[in-house]
Length: 211
Image (cartoon, rainbow, N blue to C red):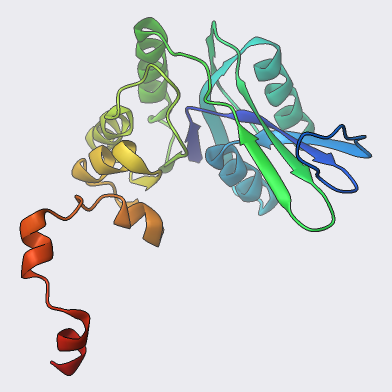
């Protein structure tokens, strides 16, 4: 069984409008909603392919309840840890030309909630063949949260796949997951900014081409 971890899931809302006009009032023609967050997208795709999958993570409030209900409707098995905060929403406003997104940060996670999830995660490792760790971290969790889960998975002999960005990616890579999937921008963000000495030592553009 593949266990997908989404620590900052969302309820994805898509509003369709004729045209998005800044500072204007818009009439929405259609509203679509679905479970959101990278890890839940992974779970839904695996389920559609017929793979045994279990989605886990942190859910709270009315929004979290709606996410869980939508997963059940799609037939995706899940086992989430309840939190006191309200699960975030992401809103995409789509017109005929483009889409504009609004991403909420997510609820603040307490130490007790994180501890409960860590215990729950370790129990799921007994049945897992692979785990995926995907998406952003909600407020309150340390940047090393994924690294901690990767270490637990290694102890249990379960390969871990990591797909995140920023400090969570930096810490996660140090924990040596079996596979990481950063894109070019996410990798570039891990490089420290150039110092004045770096800039002084760099060859001029024309000289570099000539060499």
